[in-house]
Amino acid sequence: MLTGFKNFIMKGNVVDLAVAVVMGAAFGAVVTSIVEGLLTPLIGRLFNAKGIEEMQWEGFMYGSVISSVISFLLVGASIYFVVVLPMNHMIERRNRRLGIGTEVKEEAAEDPQIALLTEIRDSLRSGSPRA
Image (cartoon, rainbow, N blue to C red; front, side):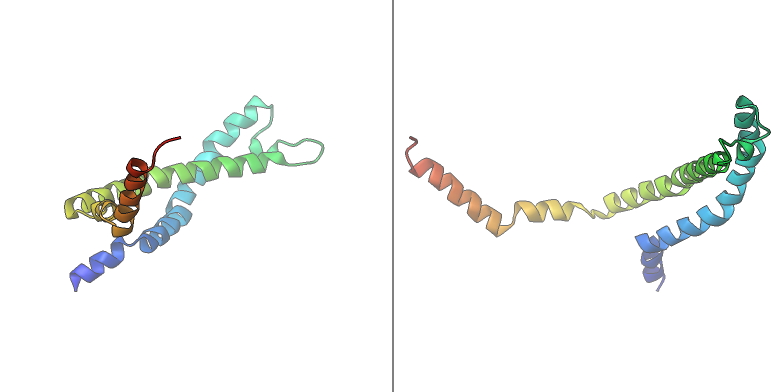
């Protein structure tokens, strides 16, 4: 029973769902506060504005778009390096330990159709004179 639960948890869909929930909830709030409290004022001062959100050009508020892009990139990088990369590493280690992934390469090499086609090719090369 625990093995089945472990296999369910290790499936990609469950991990992807967990990553999405964590990305939206936990890291979103932290990164938003970093962007709004630190980066927005710093970038805004470079362009003589109070913050990024106040940056505009002929009425177009492009500053909020820049702020959202920065926030998205920081959230994405955080979730990749904190959740996805360690999870992929853990799955690779488990697969190496269990020998998963090597069977596909062995099956391709031992495929009877490939062996037959290779034999036909070799006999055609040796049997037919070159022009």
